[in-house]
Length: 415
Ligand code: EPZ
Image (cartoon, rainbow, N blue to C red; front, side):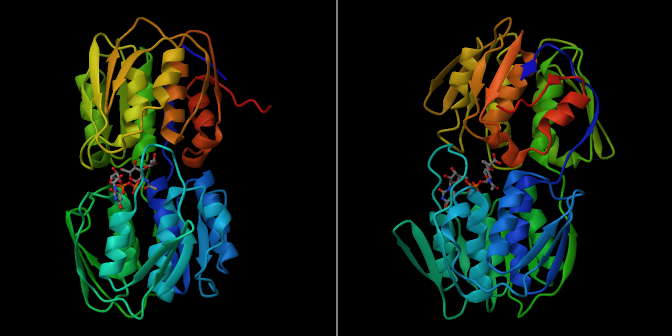
């Protein structure tokens, strides 16, 4: 429940990056030893992944500071039980990890947010190039290899998931793997750094060519995940949403926020970086702006939905082009319930700024749609009731607590 209209003022800290964490946990399994991962976000996807690896024989525990200890020496299953893998997309990283560790894995097709077709053909093409036989039958994917051998792989599309999965799978392959047209997202670099901390030899992560020189074995490691770029961006947008906002967001990597900062500045919002903090000040109704989502370092698709909410009250017409996920406009119908003026045509949404949103009962259809509705609720007059919070809980740690600490009138109501 949100009572809108209150500008956000104060300081908050960003948690560890969800989309890095959900790859680091599976990647830890290939070491066949102990790993300590620090600064993990306390979100549902992390708990689900922990349960999955425990069911597979690993030992894993996480404390309230986000430190997870994983001992994968007892991991004994290359067949992953069906149920929970369907809860999150990132369970596909178990394919790369178990293929590397056991040369064999069988798992149900992964689930995740419903934001359009989510093919994994590039992952599969890469696994095949490394020497795996791939079978997809009755909703299950099975991979099997006598041995994995390094290969040159050119990705047809820039895919975060395929880049990370193939880096993990190739870590202990014989010889060198070259991934071309690789994704450059911060979490790709983070996973490469973690693999290297266990003794892997991955070079070039953060550019579009990554080389993985196979090693025979890995060792224990202790590693701290990077701060969440998308969580930081979400709070930057929230800070800009109501004139009078003045929020300092701590524990950020400024470079990761360049595209969102540039867009907010274009909209007339003040953005100041200082060390590992960013301060966002809103003195005015935002100006309209056109946005096109692109792979990193372009404007992230994961912030497209939250920034759409901000643009609903801008001073003109904005055109939003979603070039990554064709189905990522399901939040629009909910925003319209609150008085937004948005027309969607294929992959483009045209947003006409209006004078005000009004609180309504709305439903989160996926993780970032949920964040978008929270921002809209903060901007709206009156009370907004948001349903299906489990989507938000998958990816934001204590969202309502952090916003309440900035002065938002927001509370979770259990029915
Ligand atoms: C990751 O998904 C993120 N998820 C997504 O964040 C994010 O939206 C996306 O990257 C893009 O940045 C996780 O990291 C767990 P992709 P991923 O492979 O890896 C096409 C969130 O809100 N494609 O980079 O699954 C695909 O259809 C989530 O936190 C293929 O065609 O995305 C899409 O158009 C939602 N074949 C494009 O590539 C493939 O084999 C990018 O997808 C793989 C992808």
